[in-house]
Image (cartoon, rainbow, N blue to C red; front, side, top):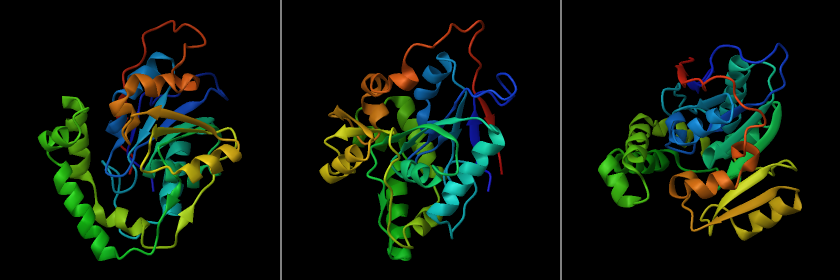
Length: 264
């Protein structure tokens, strides 16, 4: 299943056979490809091509009431290969998007994986009807930009508009299906990076130790919210010099404007 993608350079870039990595962004639950609206221009300015993907049941991507985490990951891998065949990938996944990234990591040519505030564990065995009802209540609470700004004072006006729109497009049936199967847990590959809120409601001390013992670079941002780049944008970008550091070479022409490519 191909997923809706915001592609900042939908035409082929680089020399044939180029090994320059493409940056892939995966949002969290009830977010969307637009959730990275503040992050994408900074990546473009550093010369990166960016693919920001709507996960299944989110944004403008297809719905699937029988979705599994493996199917979500396969859809991400298929979409990345469709948009940027043969290119190495730097992938950033937040929360639920991080679990999808962890599941997809062996199907994508990963140059670097960045997991944002995710313990990389998914509890299964949930009652589907109860979970759908819960997600619908959460969705309703987040569909008003004014209500979101009241709940999250660190949101800008545009942040709230983007996230309210994402909530309105969210499909509870698709997301509930993910949690109705077996439990899942993942250990990030050595050399990957975990950026976490400090303290975090989603990443435990045991998780941090497990990741560090496995060769993961663990970087905390004191006082950050779960959506770290919304509450602490400067600290988030500073924590990832691999992505947001100086461009290795000056760009000879203006950076391309983002273009939306709808895949289905």
